[in-house]
Length: 297
Image (cartoon, rainbow, N blue to C red; front, top):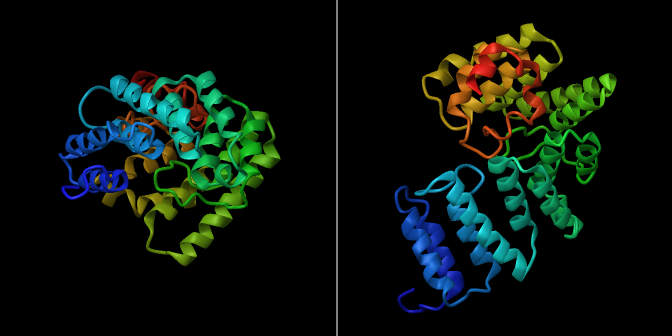
């Protein structure tokens, strides 16, 4: 950068690199904002600045959630005005739905996404967010339409919360009152996860996801046994991802007390489980009226 102070891609790469060192996020953003003065119409630069304020896992260093989300959306809007592209639209929809709970505004952004090429709308993250939005809207038709965009049965994106695609389809069928279709979807998820465990037997997340699926199928004995082998170890070190996996499991089991024990570690850590989305997401319907859950909210 000292040799090429106006090189936008190099500045983006430098900021991206710096941002990986904890405590230097503000410094990274300063690099981005400095180059923005020379390249105000670079949509990818705007997108990366938005990500520095609020991405899929947290709402960035400094400020409050509301101010950081507003700053992120401001830069996303600038990027979209220059050149609409799927990644910017998907992030904007996620931030609006997750942190504001504004489903009509979220849907308006997803309608813009519909204008993008099918290859971008069929990407894992795009399908996931569109299905998630449909579930919160309680619109099974929209969930099914999004699922039809891809033949992939598992979301290999660690940012996402419910990775077997059939989980989201099962919830859509549940909302529609399609009991047999719901059960078939949970069984489809079970088959996918058993194959994943066969291919990667040391991955505990597949074990927990299988247990969660079995809980929805009311195969409680095997589900409990799978979790009992993992939960004590995880509780000693609740790394990112572990509280959410356990909370999802206990919600599927209908155990509000145990789900509520993990939710404080999870609420408002990602846009997918926030004080705005929990009242909307059908995943929590089994325990929604339980005293422990009501008290937590």
